[in-house]
Image (tube, rainbow, N blue to C red):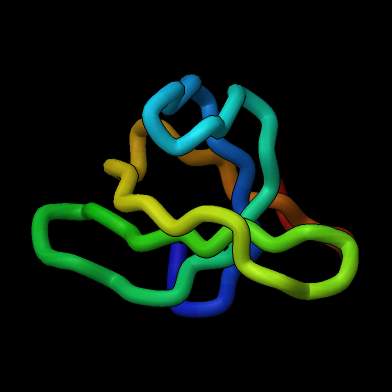
Length: 67
């Protein structure tokens, strides 16, 4: 995973009102395989930002990717 990749979270983060499956974008890459994810509404306004370990994320692909 890299900067600006689209991901979905695999765990709830109730203190940020985020639930499993919510989609966000990687906006910062931290050490030790942690990523800062920004979550926006349909108008493009940020409603949450949080750091997740890569094990709590799944990358989303919009085009064909080799398996």
